[in-house]
Length: 127
Image (cartoon, rainbow, N blue to C red; front, side, top):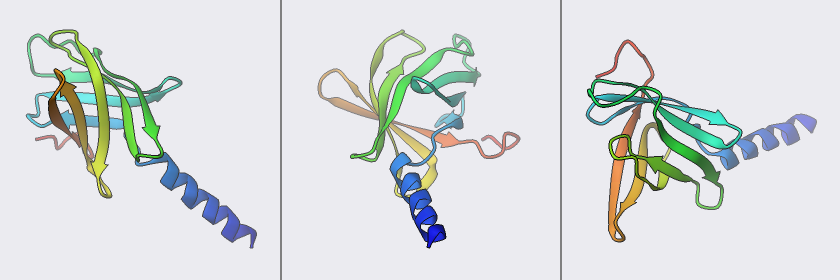
């Protein structure tokens, strides 16, 4: 009986915390690699590397990212590397696929914009 209770607790905790976003991700155009890490202030995303001349590795891209259990999404702030602006962002996966991270942000008051980041599984095989 104790095994079933423990197993039920483990399954419940997994569902509540959502899919793990920590790790390395590459941009849709494959010019940037981002690294998302868990901190005491939630998750933080930094630019790990880039082929763009004006980019600086280590720049903070995401901050204050927390999992919203009611909506089953991550929310926080995304920071632009090029123009130093910040805006609210929603991060989520489609269904149970944790290989593509969708970052939805708002430009101006009415324009939604979605970025796609792809999980790096094998660092020797990045498109």
